[in-house]
Image 1 (cartoon, one colour):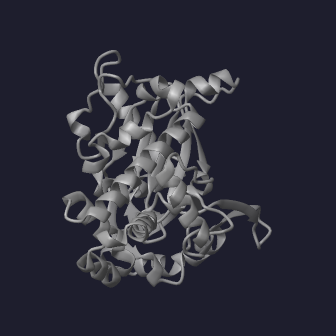
Image 2: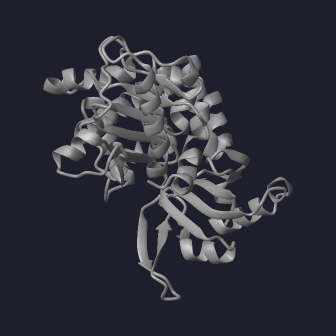
Image 3: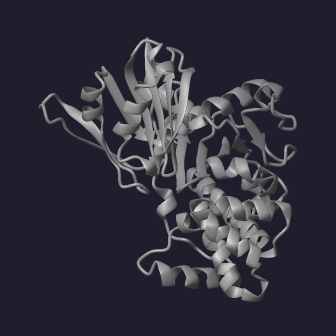
Amino acid sequence: MTFLAGDLGGTKTLLALCDRAGEPLCTREFDSRAHDSLEDMVASFLADSDVRSHPSPQAAGLGVAGPIHEVARTDGAGFTQRATITNLGYQIDAQSLQQRFQLQTVRLANDFYALSLYAARVVQHVESQAHRDGPLRLPDALAQQVALIADPVQARLDPQGNLCVLGAGTGMGQAIVVRERALRAAGVSLGPAPVIVATEGGHTDFAPRDEVEQDLLRFLSARYPEHVSVERVICGAGLHMLYEFFAAREPQRVSPQVAHELEQAGAAAPAVISGHGLSGRDALCQLALQRFVMLYGAEASNLALKSMATGGVVIGGGVARKILPTLQDGLFRTHFLRKGRFAALCQRMPIYVLLDPLAGLRGAAYLVCDPR
C-alpha cells in the first residue's frame, strides 16, 4: 500500500508517494504560484513515470498553509474538510481530491500541525538518548535532522513538558504540542500521544520593543493601515521589508549593486539579502538580517511562554535552515531571553532547529500512516 503526502506552502509544494511506514518513495517539488490549484499539482505528480511505477496511492495526508474547516459533504455522506491557503488563495476540498484521484481517505491539516507531528518525534528521540540531568547534547544520529541553539548547560530536558513549533517561510506558522503532564493536570487521559493545536499566531499584532522597532511599526502601518502582524516582519517577505525599512531610514548606505540585484531577483529578493547579510558584504543587508533574527528570537519566546513550552521550542521553515549560522551566533538567544522576570524560565527551554528539508512532508505522511 502507498500513500500520497503533501506539504503545500505559499512558495513551493512538496509531494511524495510514501510507503506504509511513511518513507518517501518518490518526491517532487512544485512552484505553488505556477499552478492554479493543488489538484493540478497532484495530477501532474501522479502522471510522473517514476510514480506510476509504484502502486497507486490509497490515501492522502496533506499539510496546507491555512486554516482547516469541516463542512457537510455534497453527497450527504457525513463531513469533509476544506481549506483556504492564506498566501495563495487556493481553495482545497478533501472530497473533491478523494473523488478525482480515487482515494479511500484524504486528511487535511494545517501545515504546522503536520510539521509538529514530525517535530514531536524528533524531540522525543533526543530525549530518549540524552542524559536527563547533564548538559544537553544531540545524538550523532540526529545531526542531519536537528541543530541546537540553547545553551546546553542551562537547558534542561522535560519529556512531559509542552513543545511549541514555529517557523518563517512564505508566512509565519505556529503550533503548540501539549504533552502528558499538561493533559493530566487538565484531567484528560489520552495516553502518551500528544495533542497538537494548530494556530494562526503569526497573524497576531507586531509589538515593538525599542525605538528602531517603533519606527518600523510606523513604516509598516503606512503600508498596512488595518493591521500589522508578526508575519509582516518574520517571514521571507518580511526580511525584504526590513531591508526596505533600513534603506528608507539610511538612504546614503544603499548599495546601487545590491539595489540592482534586488530589482532583478523578484520573489528571490530575501535570498539576496540573507546572502549579503551572512557574508557581511552589505551593511543594510546585515542590519536587516540582524533585526530579523532579533525579532524571531523575541517571537519564539512569546510563543514559548504562552504555551509553557518547557519541553522545548522547535524552529522549522525554510528560512531557518538558510540562516542557521546567524541563529546560532547568540543574537537569537539573547532576544529569546529578554523576558524580564521570566528569563530564567526561558533559559531552561531547549531550542531546536529542524534541518530536514522534508520535515513537513514527513509530518504530512504521519497524518495517514499514524493519524494520532
